[in-house]
Image (cartoon, rainbow, N blue to C red; front, side, top):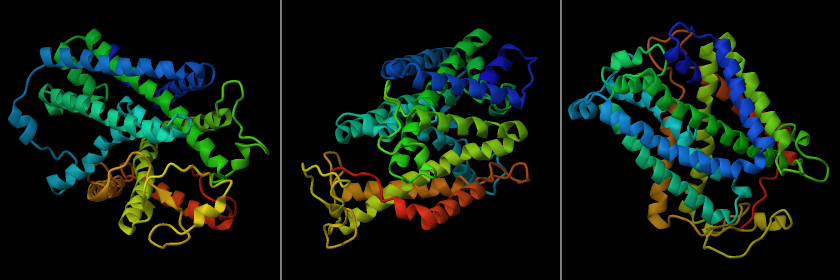
Length: 405
């Protein structure tokens, strides 16, 4: 997006892939700086990001709707395009759906709070109540804002062909420019999106490093000894941050960015792994929860708190329903009970299966070696490596996460 803004203000600029890699590293550097040097200010900074997110929504929506061209309702709600060359419009819809669900992963600021709530729940007070509330508030707030922005963009889009052929490489910048007819105004509107994208990177460095640290603490991550010492978890004592995990996360990200210099197609395939990888990680617990619901293996809410690290026998006690060898789970204070909960789980599982399946498809036909989506190969390798790693080593040291109920 930064390169797109450069093209917008300097039409003579030519995209270079290594420029994009350097800009990627610069954004990562900012994220590391915030998460290490000024980590104590991170909560206040994220409150500021939330304010920018809400105010930026109106800063974009108002000039877009007031000054932009207005299309007809029939074009917005009844016109379907099959730009991928697929056999049917329905198939084109499902392939194109993958790009839309990308935002639900928290790649943009719309779901920073939902993602961070999930991945940093160990650092949140009263997480069993506050995390679900944060998730639902985020979905409600951003669902309303996102739908309003979607309708506004569709009505003010203009000619789809011209928008897709924009030299910036980002159609939303062309839509902004068509509305305000000003390079400065377009830059200001697009800068809001860029700032929120950088802010999302800061949040995800924080959340991914915590996930890395937690998995290493439980001895589930390869080379977990690097992240923990003999007696204490390796958390930087002055700031209470997992410094090694942060540096490991950003180092891997910077190395992956080098792929962009050699092949943008290969780099995009790596990026697409965030869809099938994260949705697969969501599908596993959701499907297991559905199984537990259907078998009645979750007991009624309890106020008893037990740590299985100190009493591992409780982890294998008979669960409700007479099943043994399973963790004896109890409902927390937040849940969707009964048939409604089962329906939500089934809908979520079906949705994620569809998304994972189509995330391996190429974006258009005919498919060539340059346009093929190779993420299925990388995903298959990761799955095979994980299975082999678990069978040969991890099953002897990994006993599951530390669970408290």
